[in-house]
Image (tube, rainbow, N blue to C red; front, top):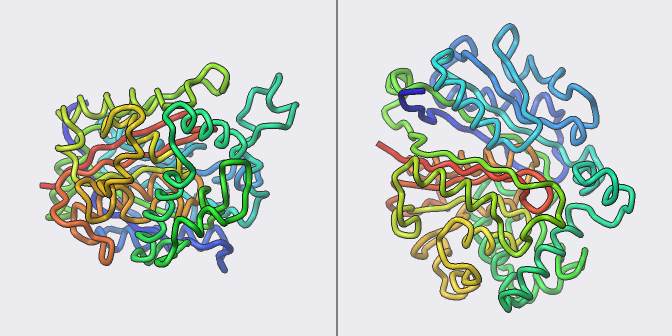
Length: 382
């Protein structure tokens, strides 16, 4: 388990609500782009990890038709049925094992091919919650938002400010689906109510999209690029799937995942030592909860970071300059996009949403109802 691992390439599709492409061609195009960026061919890849989900793809063995377009034919290949950040963690461990030097990770989803928000129901307690039919991704998020807002006195306006920040940032990101440079708090609060207090612009958009990254061992990374982005720390933690046993006003699993990642990266004060954060906020209130779980502020003070502009793109600690998951959320690729965006910022390749002087960044992915499982990556440049 000795040695270092770096990100040496990344690419993502243009994220859309109904992509005029097959899933296979979308993946093929992303793989072509990420290999081109690194100057490699499919033959240079030792192992391939995909993030796909049978429920979301509407077919069992959902990777059976993507082995060829992802370039995994006759290679060591595996699938993770969760967020792409989990797949990246798996690939990272495979390289550290010493068995592989270059790993390709690809996450993809086409929400235009499945019913809105329905697949998340299948992750609930099968003896009570699932048969009752009351909970789904959005109604559970509404319970989470209400618990948090009531405990800490957070208003709907303060929650809406997260959407405003992220969707304005997304207007500068050519890959984002929702690009709303003139979005206001009033427009967020006037959008369609889904489950109180979750409105349409408080929730992630159903998205078609894909993302890929290339990981390489230390020796191989230095051969591939002069600008490797090193994985300096990782953390992963999963909470119980039963909501009645979880603290919905916080996110214990993210807190533990972050603590492990910080310890590995030698970070003691994340607010000062991290230059940029990319989180997978499926709903706007989650970003405030994540601030606190990541140790950027104390519990209940997430709204203060928003009110004071600290997490704006030009603030003290920018969060989601890409627009985050509120701007595009192709499930199974979202956490991978956060990693790609965080690496892009370190390399100074983020274009219109580039933040100045990013040396250390944090990327986050989540899986499950109300962020049940969380993965944290700490990335750094040379």
